[in-house]
Image (tube, rainbow, N blue to C red):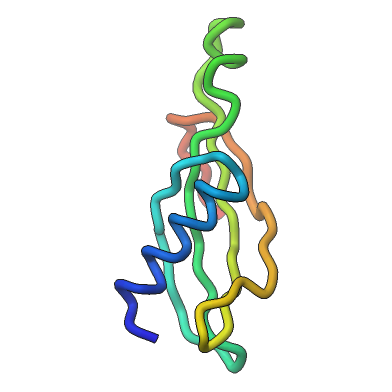
Length: 86
């Protein structure tokens, strides 16, 4: 599948299923199709209400060759601005 289509489908999935706008930060091919990493802003209003930084998350989305989502999971959660090296 063309990378532009993969990126578009991943962003649409996040918006439709998580209610969050996502920024694709990684795409790789695997034996089942593509593995996409998407960074999203979570809990924006809640965090601001208590004077904290925005809460960010990274989701991993696996799509098959036809562009159908096979699975997804949140792999990381952190406060915006924290430089967290893995």
